[in-house]
Each structure stands twice: as C-alpha cells, then as structure tokens.
Length: 288
Image (cartoon, rainbow, N blue to C red):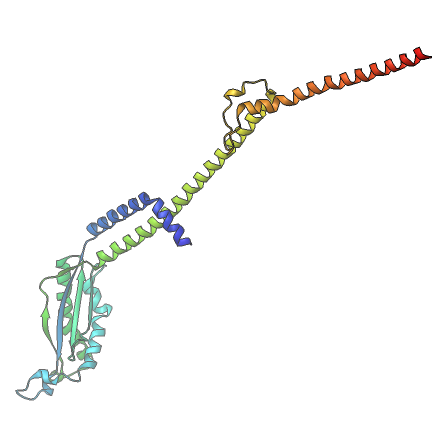
C-alpha cells in the first residue's frame, strides 16, 4: 500500500521528478568532467634460478620449480614501507602493487602502478621494477648467499605508455546518480504530502465558510419575518435541495396569519355564547 501511494505521489508530482532527474544528470556530468581520470601501467618480472642449479648448456626456464618461497618473500619486501615510501613519497594519488601472477605456474611477479598523470604513473612503475632486483639482492645479502646460488631477476614486459582508467570516475558518477535518485524520490514524496495537507486545510476552511454563510442567510430570513424581499434570495450553498424564495416567505408569514385568524374567531364565539345566555335570562324573567 505504501509503495502504491508513493507511486501515485510520483505521478502527481511528475514535474518534480523530472526536475530531480535533470539535476542529477547535470551533477553526474559535472562530476565526470571535473574528476580527473587515473592512469595505469603494468610490468612483469620473473625469478631466474641460480646458475649452480642449471646444467651446463640447459635452458634456465626448465629449472624454475621451487622458487615459490623466494617469490613470496620478495613480494612481501616490495610491499613494505621501506620500499614504498621512497617511491611514492607523500603523494596520495600514487599507488602500486606487486603480487604473484596467478595466471601462470612460474615465479612471475605482476607490478601494477597507478597515478593521476601518465608521467607519474610511468615513473612509479619504473622505480618498482628497479626495486625488484635491489630487494632480491638485499634479501640474499642478509642470508649471505653465495654468488653461484643467487636468484636473479629478468623483466619480461613493461608498459611504455600509461592507460587511462575511469574506474574512480565511474564510482563517483554512480554514487552521485544513486544519491540524486534517492533524494528525488524522498523530496517528491515529502512535497506531495505537504501539498496534499495544504489542499486539505484550504478545503476545510472553505467548508467552514460555506456553513457559516448558510447559517447567516437562514438567520437573516427568519429574523426578517417575511418582510424582506425573498424573491432574489439565492439558493443556499452546500444544500442539495433548492428552496424557492416564495416558499420561505409563506413559511415565515403563515404563522402570524394563523394567529391573527384564530383570535378573532375565538372572540366571536365568546360573544355569541354571552348573547345566548343573556337572551335566555331575559326570556325566564319575562315568563315569570
């Protein structure tokens, strides 16, 4: 029932809904234009096994098994503040991530850099790619690994151009559209309720005025006692029965006529009774 009433209110105040939709569309367009897009660039690096594990003249890619532990430790190091702070600085618009490529079975790290400009994004990506062998060297130096058993890093691919990404823009636009539509719905329902309440109060005032006017006209008719000109008296408002003015005149004036006609009749009968009595007395006296 509530949904039906809300739908009726929206249909009644369709112009408010239209204004809300247009305002929401305009605000969403403004947010989309004024919100700068972000840029994204990617790179992939692979861990190469140490020379000591590779047979002479063999392909190193055939010996990449068992490097998962070293890969996990390296990704943790790349995400640490010790590596991130020198690269990102205090710019909150710059971010990057370094994680294992789950789409392959080899020890490959995918680096994803994001920034508010193409130049800044490419700089972050390049710094992270350079930090991979540096971090790997640091970890192996801490463990005092010999040169023959050290793992090396090979860059597979690195973007030379950053691609614009509109994810942040679309998120803001969707948020604005959702808030605008909800606000339009609530505002329309509230305005519809206010307007209906105002209309109801005006109707009640008009009905009260009609009742008072009708009572005043009847009072004037009764007090006039039939002496006013009832021919031009309009029909009483608010009544479904039209009372002719001449009928009202007769209704008011007839009681006085009845009283006037009755009193003479009563006096005449008394006088007649008294005359008959007097005649009877005179006849008795005369006979005696």
